[in-house]
Image (tube, rainbow, N blue to C red; front, top):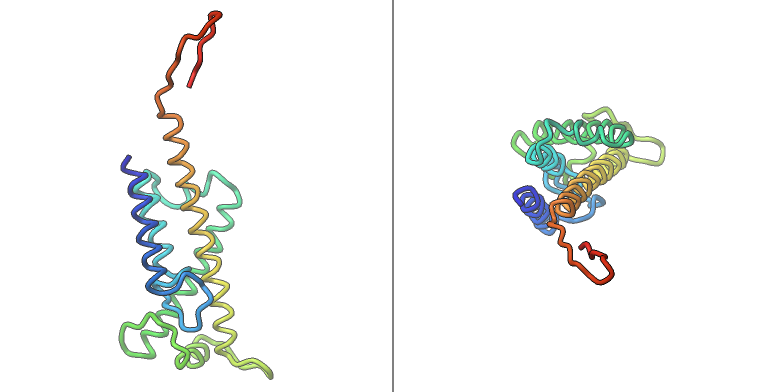
Amino acid sequence: GYKANHLIQRLKERNERYRNWDPSVYVQEPNLKESAGGLRDYHEIVWIVKAFGYNNIEDICNKKHERLENLTKARESYDFLLRVRSQLHIQSKTKNDVLYFSSQIEAANSLGYENSEVTFSGEFLMQDYYRSARTLNSFCKEIFEDLESEVKQRRFFAKKRTSEKIEYGLTWLD
């Protein structure tokens, strides 16, 4: 049906986007919007849960308690990525979604990160980036898996059952 096709299309688009950028959240110069665990992953989840008839992400997360905790973490990660992306726009004075190596230290310092005796501020920023991207990526995969399971379950229950009389008064149900 429509929902299954919509889900399949979104997954194809996500996989294509990952091929264009990188399927891993652990890249040295991530695209904050398009890379795995980026802002677009969260946007896709917001859109697809609505296509499945939910009012918002909370509706699907209410089915499982741990999902609500993961939603809170995912939103914190999303907010972090938005702050970093906004800082990149300010630094470059234009739209810029790529956290280039050359801009990481300046972005980190502007966002309040400081060097330690052994670690540069840019490394601390990237540690937080990887944590946030991993959290967002995992959460979005969980939601996609929940929706995929829902589609499979609906197909199972929508399947027309057949019966066939067999010997000794028994009926074979399929």
